[in-house]
Amino acid sequence: MTAGLVIGKFYPPHLGHAHLIRFARARVDRLIVIVFSRRDETIPGELRATWLAQIHPDCEIIHRVAEFREPRDANDFEARDFWVAATQHACLTPLDFVFTSEDYGDWFAARLGARHILVDRERRAVPISASQIRANPDAWREYLAPCVRAYFDARELIVVWRVTDFCNLSCHFCGHSRTLARPRRTADPAQMIAFGNVLRAQARVVRVCWLGGEPLVWQPLAALTREFKHQLGLRVAVTTNGTALASRAVREHIVADYDQIIVSIDGRASFHDQVRAAPGLFAQLERDVRALRELKMQRGARLTIGVNTILMRDNVREFEALCNELAEWGVEELTFNALGGRDRPEFFPAHRLTPENVVWFRGDLPRVRAAMHARGLHIRGNANYLARLDARARDEPVPVADCAPGTRFLFVDERGIVAPCHFTTNEFGVPLAQIGDAGAFQNLAQNFSARQRESLRAPCANCTSTQVFGKFADESFLPRKDTKNTKEK
Image (tube, rainbow, N blue to C red; front, side, top):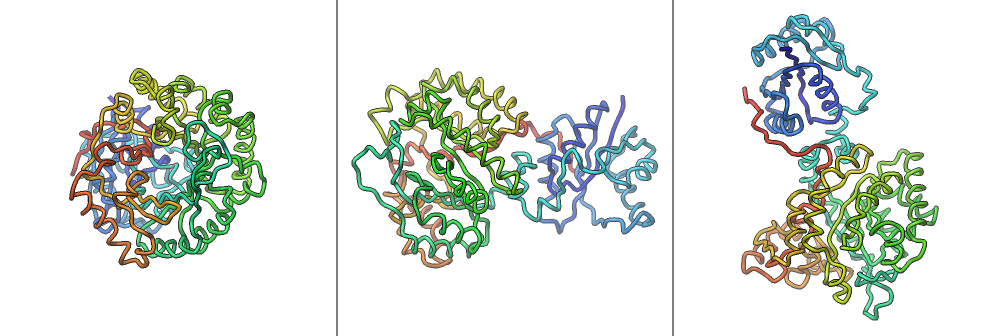
């Protein structure tokens, strides 16, 4: 039986480490991975070891705390002796191979009585380093496994801001359809800038996501986006029906001034065009999303191109076919949600998902997710979210007594009312005018939580807020595994 060794700080683990570990694991009967950490590091070593155990359940993960230093050069024999002794103390198994991507591997393996296997020294297979990720985790998040992404994402506050309820389409299922006679409003730009400055003062990463209606047709938004992104230092995203992407100028703006774009596409061409009452729209989106992707590559931009799709009984069986088309376009992320009945109750009954639809979808999704991951399309949504879809299809209420309201997610509507989510503006909403400084903002989550504890409000008695259940959780890297193979030394 052959035994191999990989050591490192894994600070944090990334796809480059995964490439090395998988290469090694395929060549030995038993692979030991040692995580070395120091007490002054910002990501605990125990957590890094747990992540590695989730990502590589077929390896033995050992964690050791040591006040080490990096070798100054190839002749730093004191540092060499330290690393050899620390490794021998942590791993008592006789080794056949040591796998590294570093120049030190030859002498290190020799001191351990093993053969060195050098793997991708030039980092051509996965061009990333842990120091790059620590410096800017959002820019390199595609190189992180879901469990690691979740750690960095937890530091991020998401603010979904509906800036207008005007729309240029006549979608049959949407309450913002231009055919509906209803009051229409837009946000106050001055109020938006004022609250943007409050968000800027927060000691955490803030991502503002514009929503509509159709936000990209609202004329003030381009200048506001540039202000939020480049002056206030906030991350900016937008959810759009994609019609504005026909303009080269809009595509240039998206690439230059946004971190993320989510295009709403609800099936393949015939169904999408029919349900959106827009003949030819799907073909237009294919052309324009491809052009956006090409422009992104030309500019070297860190823009994430995503799609959200609404699942109905009419389109759920075509989910994989839609995914294949989106992967061809260069779409990187896909989210999904079930058709809701709040906006257009007359459309809902005949098109909602049935329990049988959801059972089939849940059974097929792991296969589709793996196939799409291989093509670069990451499908979000975890097991908890799928369970919520099932309960909704069965009309089973799911009460949520404590969602930690306002701690990671806020919703702001076009009137300037901020709430824990879109469904709670009446029960929890606070006017932005009352949140004029960082102190008032810090009290917001505490006040929301106090109200939630008073009584179970109607929206919370049957929570339909998708982010609470894990719609945006990313499980596309590897399935979660039991972490019992982690050893603490």
